[in-house]
Amino acid sequence: MKKLCLALLIAASSAPAQEPAQEWAMRNGDALFSRAELQERLAGQTLTFYDDGQSRFGPNGGYSYTYGVGGTAYGVYEIGEDSTVCIAFDNGASRCDLYVMNTARLIVVTEEGQRFPVRPAS
Image 1 (cartoon, rainbow, N blue to C red):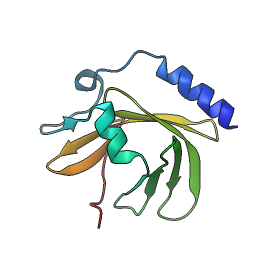
Image 2 (cartoon, rainbow, N blue to C red; image 1 turned 90 degrees about the vertical axis):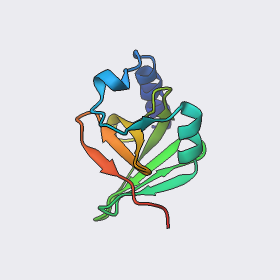
Image 3 (tube, rainbow, N blue to C red; image 1 turned 30 degrees about the horizontal axis):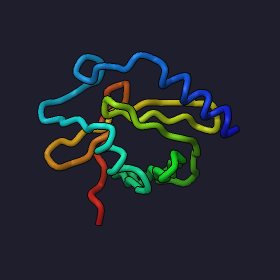
């Protein structure tokens, strides 16, 4: 299963990169990350959202999302050059999100334009 997820992630990463200013629902004050900045911010970390969901980014590309109401989805993640993170889930689903800073707050922006602020670390 891990080989399948890795193959999906590789195939997705060979697609042309999206231009955040044109393809993503950016707002005034949104600041993008470089790949190195996002890697440093995410690898080995857990992000907690206001619905109590948690994204865990393993240091070697493993990913899990635990829903606030219970249940966990597993997969692998890859950080793009354009402030994006793409995840290939073990169940075959995949997604890419844009990570931005706005007013000292980390925000995850979905391809549909939804914005999910991350709780500050305590």
